[in-house]
Image (cartoon, rainbow, N blue to C red; front, top):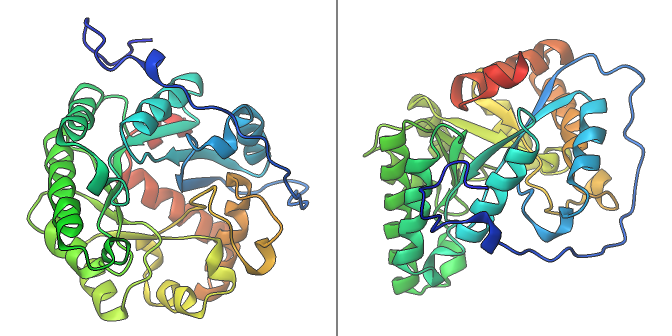
Length: 298
């Protein structure tokens, strides 16, 4: 399957082997009689071992809940290739983003980073974004060399996105200001995934025209609820960040795109806006940012 690679196939998908992981999944019924809205999961990691062998079923369950599209993010070269493969198998339902995650950046050689940059250039017509990329100062634990490597890799990803005309999905845990400042040097659309930074930084992000996502933690995190309250509905998206596990009402629930309606319901409650109107606006936000959403919703 060389759907966006050169003739030599240096980045062949055949080299990617991710072993399925068997897990006991606690289930809770999230079914609605007649989903009355369309939803998008703006951030999930479908290449994770937790989902392998069950992706079609997970997507079918989500679609019954009204979740039409998922934005599948990557963490390194291997998961970038795997995410592209998944998207190829599920056209118009899975929109792929490729990139090098800040947790992977310190241990990733520049040669491998270069291959991800090459993927962005070669596959830009297939991609919805560059992600998940960014910075995480907490992960470096005071290691200056690791922090500088994160910054260097992030700049490579920003440059690749700018050249390809693609948006960037940014990880910014305890580094939101630094991510914002780095991104400001590039002409890219930005989505601050699971933003959890200070409100003063949030306002700068919003003033710059960038977007944020919120996930299931909005049901129990007072800080995330405040962030949702402070963010105009025109600048927010809903995500799961699966397979991340959550507390509160989701403690015994597997994180799949089927949770998205619950996230949007909470956003609507906090904003004091009808659910139908909230759902339409959030989908419209995704249309404005992510490549391929319009086509997928036709």
